[in-house]
Amino acid sequence: MSKEHIKHLIEARTDQDGLTETGIKGVRLFRATQAIPCVPAVYEPSVIAIVSGAKEAILDGHRFVYDDSQYMCCPMSMPVRAGTPAASTDNPLYGVIVSLDRRVMTEMAMEIENTGGVLPVLEGGLRAQGIRLAKWDDAFTDALLRLLQLGVSQTDTAVLGEVRLRELYYAILKGEAGVFARHAFGAGNAIARSIAHVSSQLNAPISIEDMATRAGMSRAVFHRKFKQVTTMAPIQFVKSMRLNNAAMKIAGGMTVNEAAMDVGYVSSSQFSREFKRMYGQSPRQWSDAQQFAAEIG
Image 1: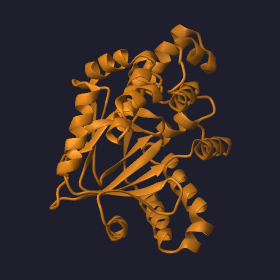
Image 2 (image 1 turned 120 degrees about the vertical axis):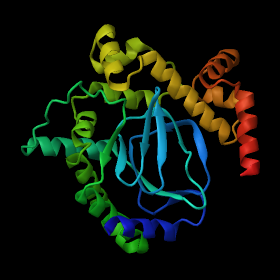
Image 3 (image 1 turned 90 degrees about the vertical axis):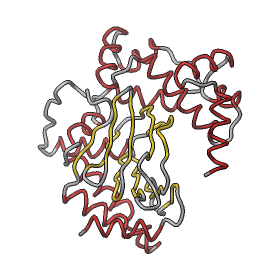
Image 4 (image 1 turned 30 degrees about the horizontal axis):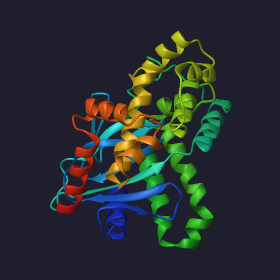
């Protein structure tokens, strides 16, 4: 019943497709009533919960499809392709995206460990393609409902927003994806911190040596551990992050040259070559296709 209540809350507050702010920092609702193929995107640290329909994400060839039986936990910035290929007016998609504040999640992960919640060894390290699906348990459902109910009152949101958000964070850290998330946000996870740094510095030169140094590892050890976490080599990851960000900027109306420079490319020809190699079409063709899709949509 709580999940159905969440659905009604989202339906009542979303009058158009796309994202809708809730007034709670980092919490957005979304609706889709038409099929959207998987296109380049970057998932920032977040949890995505679907209450109607299904959503799809592809990370380095691994396909994740989730609905109201599982929510998606992505504790680190990840370059993906995402879409809603099954959405329609008869089968609309409704959901919520909750950004995960790295400072708060790290503090809570450490508090859990310091009070006796010893972090078990995660088989294969963080090996889970950077994304994990977790079933909706009662604690997650109740915490999400309590959080979204705040949107009815600005006063309630202002006074209780942070408290209810922490309650949801706690449910995530204690739920099926909890060990995965706690490893990612734990103070000792150098790879997660390295990814956060890369995500915030895409327009600046990035070297593997610098990433390894920041992680306190040799280049060889860093390369091996980084690939365990993301399934991608560091160079491939950085390239995917840059190109996905550029594709999103172009789709948002930025010119090809502006997008290339904005994500750290000095050579427009190199950008075009790598973009076409990854997406099968030139940046200009991608831009034209996105404009056409917007016009007919």
